[in-house]
Amino acid sequence: MTDISENLRTIRNKIAKAACESGRRPEDVQLVAVSKMQPLERIEAALQAGQRVFGENRVQEAQAHWAGMKAEYPEIVLHLIGPLQTNKAREAVGLFDVIETVDRPALVPVLAKEMRRQGRFLPCFIQVNTGEEPQKSGVSPQELTSLLDLCCEHGLAVEGLMCLPPVTEPPALHFAFLQKLAREHHLENLSMGMSVDFEKAIPLGATYVRVGTALFGER
Ligand SMILES: *Cc1c(COP(=O)(O)O)cnc(C)c1O
Image 1 (spheres, protein in one colour):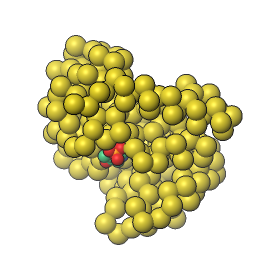
Image 2 (cartoon, helix red, strand yellow):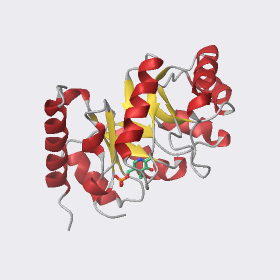
Image 3 (cartoon, helix red, strand yellow):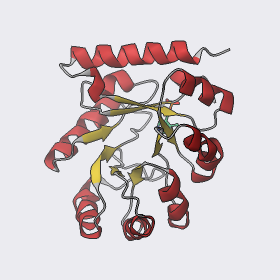
């Protein structure tokens, strides 16, 4: 049986250690607990252990996990970390608190309109396909500036960048690249690093690490 509260302590300690070693404050790195494909009892265990920030990659599944839970725990902060179809924008804006995966121009006006309609102006991240992998979502680094301009035109509040490095390359190269892009565009936040590499993302400026299996166990 996975001991979620023990895992949570371990991960928080590792975050604090990596932050201190790189001259950063532990509280400047937020843990996003990735609860996709996890049974509800594990999610409840994380809540009981005090975790409040969660990530899900599918709108439908997130509804099932969180629609009721958010009523019970209003302080939950839910991040969308997977691709968003335009026809799910309404549900996504209603449920999530942060959209990390703005990855293409077509999504921008749809999200902006939906946020106005619901009066929920959610902070957004742009997902950058740093490895320029054809199968992966995210804007290419060359298209980042124009996507940011478009977000600005439509009034989307972009607070940072997010990436998922290629599994075959050293992640630190991609984390450093994302950090450079964020600096060039004066963006504060970086969502990068998962179970296997979050400690490498912290010295390179991660303000959010997205950790699933190391916290909840295998999916
Ligand atoms: C599943 C997922 C994670 C978490 O991955 P783990 O290896 O389980 O920590 C992080 N980010 C995204 C975008 C994911 O889809």
